Length: 256
Image (cartoon, rainbow, N blue to C red; front, side, top):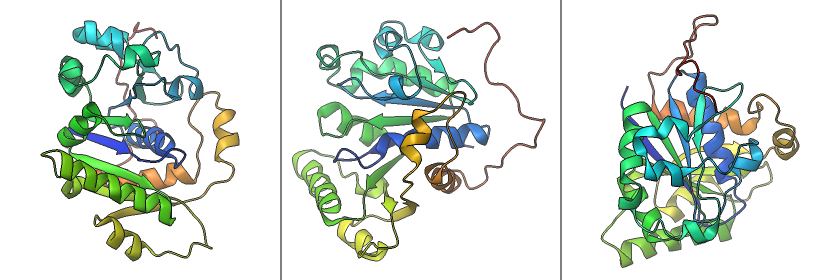
């Protein structure tokens, strides 16, 4: 099973990007694929509040001491994946403007984890473009509506025109928040984006209330089921371990 770096991106807020990144990490853990969910955002992200994590333990410390990465990641109670939080405020976040600033952390992550999931901020900057370029796969999250699709395609074109990178050949679209009343087909979405559609995820009106009540693990939702399908496409040979035979990834005494 190959090590992979996957970027989860949207060019519009509110489409469920972080929810999909989080649930993809959960799916990886369920299949005993050791995963790190890494928040890449120059502004404080939402993972610390969703998962009740200490925001003072974040990527800034890991940048200063990449070899001590395990001390700056968070183990999620009831789950089998880790989280590396982004900068604690936007001023510090602006100092991380290119990939070489986090190169040491990336190299260390690749030594420890099988799957690196990058939850990218909903904007375009030099760092995010560089991360997408180095990724093995980019999951582009869109909603089944014209504005979301048009903005996504416009930003793909902008990156191609303004940089030396053509990222379309490593992009899969994930259509989130689908309903029976959608009046746009997946073929139309794929044609408009000019990238393949990986899967659709049905709108889960109860997701927010479930995630707000999180106590011991990420709740089972329509999003988690959709992300399991994504994981199976990324790792077709992956299998869930038999009950009672799961193994632990972490050394004893590594307190978070």
